Length: 433
Ligand code: GUN
Ligand code: ZN
Image 1 (cartoon, rainbow, N blue to C red):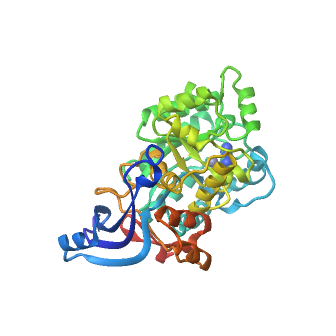
Image 2: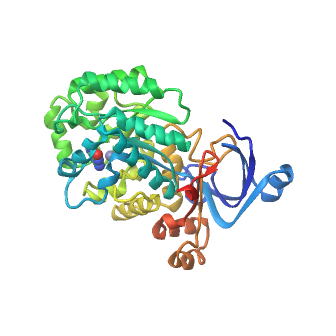
Image 3: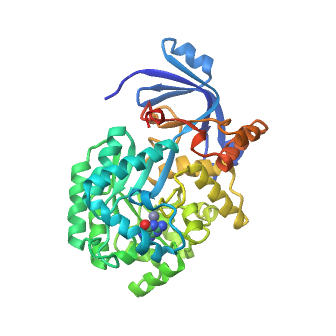
């Protein structure tokens, strides 16, 4: 229900006029003085005097030198792994078997799923993440718990039941048929819930039989407004395993293509070790990549070539990949993306990193007409950042030369203390946690 209550927020409003991967990054960023909200929507952005003049009866909140930006968008994570974040010493397959699968087994218990859903959403909000694409577990209860908790908070969430019918322990497998039936029933029960999007979610090629991948592809073709999320080319051992399991396919992506699991709305987590053919196929089919830098460093997966993917025309968003990722903070995630770029000899510009964490991820989720940027008609998911939140940040941002320099200091030195407020759908939420 629209509250139709106009509010004028003043501060340093960050607005992108262009994609900083396609135009000079410093020219892509603009700073405005005021943003006008009407209930859940952004109505206007511009000079404080003009907007106040045009809307004299409007409530006004002045945030001084604080920065107001679109809420962060995390286009790939696993809410059910919240409890096992920061688990030591394994590479991907061992990490899944040792830590992840035993924890995911617990989500058949609706009460536990509800408890972790609340904890996970609290962590998103306190870190300024207003929207995310989440893997649930094989249990339909895990999807119901997350969607109902997100809906109560008014959050724009994408999520889906993991489909997994082999190479997983007893009690954590569905079948090609039950995975299809349960996913379809979840689509039916959550369809029409405005800020929720269902994602068809085959975990990754090694944990699905060809029959299940075929069923997942059929389901997606019957519900093309759904997203599709999976993992692609994360670690060399995983890629070799896919080669063994699918000997007739020339590469990893071709497995997904064969079963209709690549196209607009597909979010491919990681996508690090790609061939030229795979990169061209991602571009040609309109699929997106979720770059998960903290996870790629933490599990030892490798260094994704974000600039190369963007130059090839592949859309890229930024993602925490919690709990393979080591932080709920998008500052930490941007910092890690910067550091991986540096190790590759490619220093991503602060404007590019910020874009990935907002508009880039929103585009990967096909929600870039609603969130991720400030423009009239977009939804009022936004965050207010304090550049003086900690002593080290304050002394650095006070000598910043321009807005890019402030953003860079925030992503290198900032944490949840710099998230002053988080507004979801026109309402402040962080104070409520
Ligand atoms: N590949 C398949 N499942 C997973 C997962 O849960 N996390 C990560 N990082 N990679 C995966
Ligand atoms: Zn993942």
